[in-house]
Length: 512
Image (tube, rainbow, N blue to C red; front, side, top):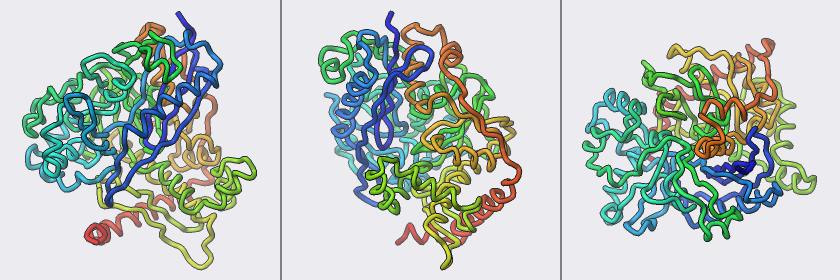
C-alpha cells in the first residue's frame, strides 16, 4: 500500500487539493479560483466548463508541490458544494448552468412547498426548515420556468455525483448522505430519499443519485483522467461528502457532543448527535454526518467569509495593490487596520447577510448594511465592523443551539478565518467558550482524504481516521475583559436586523 491520500475541495469560489500522509500531515497543496455568474438579482450560477479543468489542474499542481510519486497516492475523495442543482440529459450533458446554493430564485416557491407538505411535517421528514437554500425550490423553478429543460432532464445532479463522474466514477450516479440531506427531498432520520416528499413534488426517484456512506469506492482513475491530473492509473476514487461535512470530519466531529464551526465562504456551527433530534424552535438543521447512525445539528450563514472577501474586493483595492508590492496577503494588511480599532468597532454594526439570512430566521429578503457611521468613522472602523458582523451572525447560531438545549463547552474552528489570531480571539470572547484551532486549516480536504482512507482500508472506521489524523494545534481562552464590548456589539447587531426586517425595509427592497 502507498503512503498518501488526496482530498479535493470543490468550493464555491475556488478549489483546493491537498495530499496528506496517513497521520494528517500536509505534504503539498494548490488552489485555483473560478467564477460565479449573477445573471439576475439574487441568482448565482456556475459552469462545469469553469470548474472541471480547475479541479484537474489543481491536483496536478498539488502532486508537483508535494514531490511525491503518484503511485504512492492510495485514494482520493471530493469535498463538494451542497445544494447546487444540476440538470443532466440522458447523455450526462448539462442542459443549463448549475444553480448555486446561494441562489434565491426559488424563494417564490417556499409557500408552494408548504402547501404541498405542512411545514412541521416537512421539518420532521427532512430536518430542514422550508428555505430557498436546498435544491427543492430550484427544481420547482426550473419545472415552472424552463419546462423544456425539465422535460429533457434525466438526472437531477448534485455536485458530489457530478464530479465523481468527471473523475471516472462508474454507473450509477452516487452521492453521500450529507449531500443528499441538503436537497430538501431526503428522509434524514433514515438516510433515504423521502417517498412522501417526492410524491408531493412529482419527482421520480430514478432521476436522483444513489445514496452511499462516505468512503464507498465507486471507481478507479482511468488513463484519460490520469493524464489530466497527474494521478496514477488505478488510484481509488471514493465517495466524499458535502464540503461542510468534510470540514467537520476533518475537524474530528465523529461522535455526539463535538462542536465544529466552519468559517469559510459558507459559515456554520455543527454539533454532533447520535440521535436525529429536532430543534423545538425549528431554526436548526438536522443532517446526516459521517456514518449511518450519526447526525449533525447546525445553523448556517450563507455569506460568512464571503462577506470579508466582498469587503476586500469592494473596498480593499489599495490593500490588494500594496500586497502585490510587499508580497503580503491583502487580508493581513486589512487585519492590521482592524487590530487598531477597539472591540465594538466604535459603534459601527455590519449586517453580513449579503445573500439572505438563515440563522436567526430564514429570511431570503435580508441584505447587508453598515449602520452607525458618523463623520468620524474610519475605513478601519468599517473593516472591523465587517469582521465583528460575521462573528455576530455566527454567535446568533451558537445562541440558537444553546436555546435548543445543546451544551457547547468548546468549539473547534476551521476555515480561512483561523489564519487570523485576532479573529480567533474575537470568537472566543464573543462566544465565551474556548476556540480550538486544528493542526491544519485545510479540514475540508482532510475530511475528504479521510473518507478516501476509510474506503481504501487505511483506517478501519471513521473514528480511527479522526483519532489518527485530527490534532488540535492551539486554544484561545475567552477574555472576560472583552465580554461587555462584544455583548453590546451583538445586541446592536440583533436590534439592527430586527429593525430593518420588522420595519418592512427588506420587503420594500425586494419590490424595488
